[in-house]
Length: 312
Image 1 (spheres, rainbow, N blue to C red):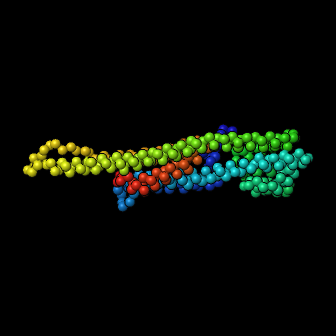
Image 2: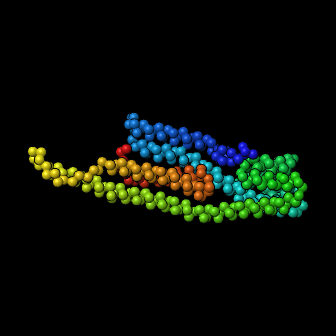
Image 3: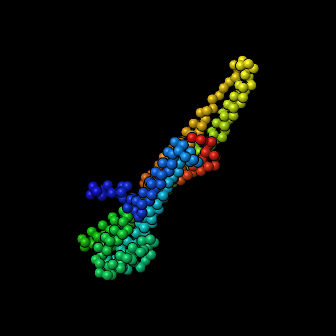
């Protein structure tokens, strides 16, 4: 049992289709981009982009493929589990007409249950070939391998072994599964507003940084250049200066712009993870949102606005 508890976390996610392969590809790709960022930082060779650019690309390469694939697999599992109550209801109704569990499964397999249909028909075919109903159900659970399917199959097989009224058990399990889905839908509706707030607040943050860069910092840089010109004009012939010129140090403006970009990068990663956890309670779903937010920040600051004028 302790082993199952550990596998229900990140290790369980790696069992979803090709999730492990996508994680390896994403990790290797991200590491390569970080290595290029290091070379750019050390000025090792003609690398066109700044280190922060390559760092943001590395984050997108790492978060994107793995996060999007795992999110797709979770949605596929959700579509499968949402059709399970319909199948259980049909089996229950067939059982109320005096059919055994095996016969009820075979008859109900003629229905349409979305992505669950091929596996149900495969289970019905196994029963017709002589496989016991309990074993066919366990094989079905191993092939589909979702939390709800495993739990439901365990309950049905126990009820069938006990010799009780399986139709009543199927009805209760079907109603319980529907209540679980209704609760999940209510949670998603409630969390959608928070997800929208995160995206809107990130967009506002980017707009504020763009305004600061294009209006405030640009004005400071121009004012500093004018003061330098005035200081040169006040300089008297023969090295005698009036000493009344004001100076404005503008060499720190690129550093401020660099910090702005780092702030957008950090917000994109952090806000994305929080958005995923709020939406589905899964860290991996947040990786998809982090990829989207980093991509928005990269296109907005580093492409549309010329990288905020950074050379670092």
